[in-house]
Each structure stands twice: as C-alpha cells, then as structure tokens.
Length: 319
Image (cartoon, rainbow, N blue to C red; front, side, top):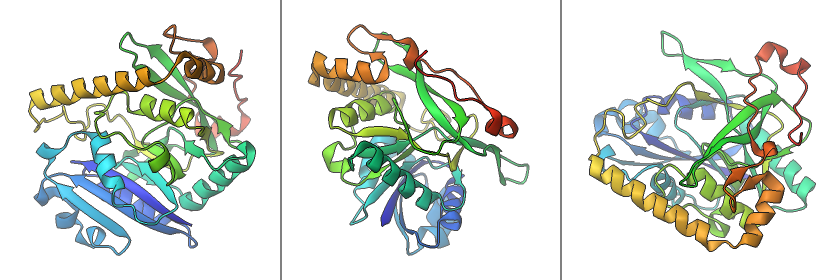
C-alpha cells in the first residue's frame, strides 16, 4: 500500500525537519512518496540547502518563488497533481515531526474505520501534538503520549466561518467519530481527490469547512485516530509561513484571493439543500440553517499533560 504525502511549504525553514522525520520514522514495510511543493526563493530552498532531500528518489519536488503563490489551498491542489498511482493521500503541514511507524498507524486506523463504518469512504484526521525547537534548533516534543482528540467549535461567525478547536483526550482502542477535518493532518484513500477534491480557489479561511461539508455530502465517514503520531510546531500564528508575515505578496492580491475564497465558500453553501444541512446537524450539532452551535458541537478545550493522560476520563460529548 503506497502513500502519497503532500507537503506544501511557504518559506518554511523547517521543511527539511519535516521531510527527514517522515523518512526516518516510516516503517520498514512502508512504501511512501513525498510530494513537495515549495514556495520560496531559490537560495532558501530545499534544492539549494538540502539537495540530497530534494533529489531523493522518493521525493517529487516542485518550486516557485513565493510572490507567485495563491495560498495554501491552491498549492495543495497543484501538489496533488504529482500523485501517480499511490493508494493513499496524506496531507500535512511543512513544520511537523512524527513518531515511529506513523505510516502503518494511519493505514491501520483507516482499516479500523472501514470495518467500523462498512465503507472505504473514510477520512482519518486530528489536530496534532506539539513540538518546539531547542536553542540548537532540534525539535523537542512537548505534548505527546497516548493521546487522541475530540474536535469541536468555539464560534459561528456572521460570515459563516466556524472557529475550530480540538480537545486532547486519552488514546482509544478504536477510531472515534469526528465533526471537523484538520487540513494539516488529513489521511484518506486517493479516490477522495476525484470524489470530493481540493478547491484551488479557496485561500485559507473556509478550507476545512469546505472539506467537511463536501466530504460529508459524498458519504465520507470522518474519524479521529486511536492515537496521534504527529506533532505540529507551537505558536505559528505569526510564523513566516503566513503570507501576511514579512509580506512579499502585494496586499491587493491577498485581498483579491480572500474575496474569491469567500465567494467560493458561499457558492458551496448554496449547493446544498436544507435536508443535507439537517443531516449534518443531527450528526455534528452544527446548525448551518440557524447559524448556531449546539452544546455537543462546542469544544471543551481540555489539554491533557502527558503524565496524567492514562488516568484521565474521556468527556461525554452529548451532555
């Protein structure tokens, strides 16, 4: 079973850490291809600083200068075109590190979910544990251990954008139902790309909602894994990978992309009738018709320290 890992990197100095961690921690049985689409100047690129990674036989590499980027959704769509005959698609961020055998774990969870729901239309997704960099620039995992998550939302804005958040909870024996998709840790069969697909016209906000609703409408089962085996860099809100930080793209282009993105989100929302939205409300507690969140859809915001994870009781989402 071959996995295509999609890594889109916008000026990210940690891309090499992510790629090395993936390679060093994949299982001996794993067959993995790494699709990299780097949006950075040539002198800072993987092909200049780490040519052994850019030219690695398991890497498919593309690069453009950062000022030509039209956002993360656009980049992920372009990068997905590098997929050839791989069976699974794993979409991640470019500043992540991984546990041993991350690949076999994802496939195992996919199989668990397929049996549980009696379909191969399955998505495995979660927020990540966290890591930080030491003074020497070495990744140090902070939140890790036997953990998984429960997804939820903290707000329903007037423009229909949902504020998503996930609570960390103890790991489980089986996959669990999810109401949100985390676009930076998203695993599914490659058929999803033709059944649902990525929308290059989205910019940033609305990406995950688009993925949730379109996947749900196509009969996909959203699942959290038994355990989280990946870790995301802490505090990236003002990180250089954001297009508005140390900006090289004209503001008018960013604003144009944002307007187009919202138009695309609204067009998607208009595609579905009240029956579909009612089905999703019954499943998730997210009421698009009345623009509100039921109690069961609200994130609890629980963060579990690793040393007490195994003694913690999982909260009841339905109370």
